[in-house]
Every structure is written in structure tokens, then in C-alpha cells.
Length: 564
Image (cartoon, rainbow, N blue to C red):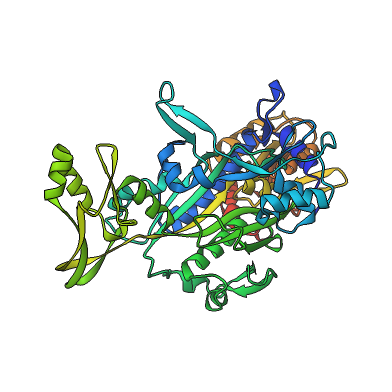
């Protein structure tokens, strides 16, 4: 492992076209980056490997929802009320700071400190403004969502989405029908999310506009098992449970049996996250899973584990695997009035005593006149659990009407029922794409004596093979271009380079992480063979030029270079 200076890596990324600071022409904006050509290729390869697991292996479906969300959606999700960080301002220069970040060096987990505890920490540890040395002021809340208006004026308030998940939850009815009303049901989505960070630092680790790869798995709340669990139950995980706060290594099966991870579904996807990250090139020795402490748990989570990787910034969360329980669908059902349940069918219809809401039509008619019929239908579509403090809130023609018990009653009836309705629980592996991207870069970075190699896993490498003529003359360049044309595809991206010495060309390819290079030399003209070089060992072998495409495909599929 190379000791990494993040500034050196970011300099390489900028110089070689991985990432560029956004709007640099106008001085830049903190927490915003653009992906260059190599960055786009690396990022897209990461996404495709994520898809290959969740869409390919697991058979989940993919959707793409809007990035602007009406206020009602994010009020239901809890983001309007709860999605805030603690902020403090310098009393002297008025510079804003995220309060918990100011005390990071003094507390192992500053996220769980209250505003009062943060203010006391400023005084106790003499923490002052980094810009001017001034005293830090009171700690308050700052909502992280970007607010906008939908349509002219301020007719409807909206927000740029703070996560992609809500687009899946509000489409539950459509997805449920598409899935023929069966559970489990897995849905994935990737796209941009937005958080108006107070004072973003640490490069790509904290961005205001960022990319997510989110998975929402809807399961029966009474059946948190997974058919493929036996395939991975004996694999190991490095875990930090919130009960001990100590690193322990155990099998996936042990983690469930000992109650460290709540259920087999959550455990399966914790291990799936390890599979994905290590296949992307994350060093398994610098990867662990930490359970959120009780005071740290998000408002929607029944349990949550973070995949953390060791970076130059310290241990950093890049994926969260949460059991969100029934929070999301229950809240959207409550706020929208829609039925977001799953019918759990019996093998045979059963006679059961059920509780129903019955409208008192004689009272509704005189009070609500023309709306009475619609109100009655809305009430009778609801369940007794929707009654709160003797009142029932219904929505009719966009108007919310609160009804007292003079307009309805809860009655018991014996009916033949085909099943019972349950609110599905949600297991959510949520991947921070930009953080994974940067982690892959850091874990691939190897620099010694001013020679830098990015040791990417071949599957994520933006360029798979460099194609060189030894000299750009005597037909060597024509043969090299011919090989390039045969080899280069969207999956096997090749790069032709004919300038400079072979050593410099190898160095250029090593610096951007290209796993293999092919050189056309004078022997090629005699016997039709070319030299292929391996990035990590620098070994070279001769192979038939006509077999170059097939050999590269075999190497990409996992064949060892030494076996050629």
C-alpha cells in the first residue's frame, strides 16, 4: 500500500481527465466536480458492475424517476422536518461551519452530539474559526435540501431530491402491479441527488451534487429470509456492532445466529456489498462494516450498517445497508391516502372476523352534501389503524377533510377473505457512486520514485488496452491501427498511441490504469506476432496478432497473464 497524498491523486485526476473542479473558469464552487473522459468511463464501468449484480444476478428491475420532487413527497419521507446538519457561524467573520466536523479530532463519533454538547466542546477544547481565529457561535439546524418552485411564481414548492429512493417508493403501486403483486420485489435506480452541504471539504467525499446507486428491496415483514443465503453463509465479514464498538470477524451465518445482524436478508446484502466493492478493486483489508449507533440511526432506519473504507481521509462510509422497516410506505400511504400494501394470499379463502370502517351516511349527507358519497368511499377504503385520536383524515378532490366519530364507526364483520394486507418492509443498500469512484482510485494508486501506476481491476479500468507501433513507419503504424480497429469496442476500450518512446507510452498507460499494452514491432511483419505487456508484473509475451481480441477477452474474463 502506498501512502497517499490526496492532493497528488487529485492532481493526477485533473491532469489525466478523470475529474475536474466544476466552474473553474469562474473560480469554482466548493463540493462540485465534473467527470472528464476517463472519469466517465471509470464511473460507467462501476455502474455496470453494480447492475450486473442487482439486475443480472438478482433479477431486480430498474427505473428512472424525476430529480425535482414536490414538497408533499419529502414531507411524507421526513426530509422536510429531519434532514438537517448542525451549523455554527464565526462570531467575528460570520463564516459558516458544520458543527460536528469542528470537533472531529476530539470525539470518535461527533455525529451523536447535541447542539449544547457541541457548544460546550468548542469552549472545552478551545475550537475557534479556522479562517480568522474568532469565537464560534450557537449551534443550530440547517436543512440540506435545495428548494425551488414548480411552475411560474410560487404555486407549488419543490426540492431537488436529496436521495433517489423516494422516486421508487412513490412508484410502489406501479411497480407492484408490474411485478404481478408478488414479494419480494427488488428495484434499482441510479442518478443525481442534491444536498446543500454547509462547508464541503475532502474533495469527492462530500459533494453538493452527487451520484447514487440505490436498491430498494420490498419484502414480507414476516419473512426476512433469502433463498440464496446458504450460498454465502460461510463467507466472512469484518463487523463493528453497536453493542461492543469493537471490530470482529465472523461468518455471515454467525452474524445472524448471534443477533449481530438482524436478519438473513440484511446480512445477505451486507455481504453482497463486500462482493461488489472487492470486485471493483477495493482492498478487503481496508474494508469494514460498522453498525450505526442508536443515537446515530436515521429517522427511518430499524437497523443500518455502513461499508467503510480506509482512505487518506480516514475510515469513510461509501455504502449504507439499511433495514428501513415499513417507514416509507406507511408514511406515503398516510400522506397520500393511497393503498401501499401487499396482499398476502392464503392457500384457501378463510372466514375471519375483520374490522372495517363504516360510514354513517345519515350524518354525512346533511353535513357534506354533494361530497358525501366520495367521502364515504374514501373512508371505507381505509383501515381502523388510520383512525388517530378518534379522527380520520381523508382526501377528496385534493382537499383534506378531518372527520370525527359522528361520521364513521369501526365495525366487526365475519367475511371470507383471500388473504391479509401487510405493509412491506424495505431493505436498502444505498451506494454513494462518487465516493466509491474515489475509493477505487485511492486503492488503485501506487506511486514510487515518481512513477505512478493505477492498479485498477481490469473490469473497471477506463482503457483496457494500449495499442502501439514500435515506430510510426514501415507499415508498423498501419498494422497497429488495424489491430486497434479489431480490438476496440464499447466493452474493450482501446487507445492508440504512436508518439514518444515505448517506455514513455507504457508509463502513460500505467498512470491511467490500463491493464495491458500491445506493441507491433518488426518481428510482427515477419511472423505475425505482437508483444503483449501486463501492467502489474510488467511481464511481456508474444501472441499471434490475429488472436489479440480473443486473448484480451480471456484476460478480462479472469485468465491469468502467466498462463498465456
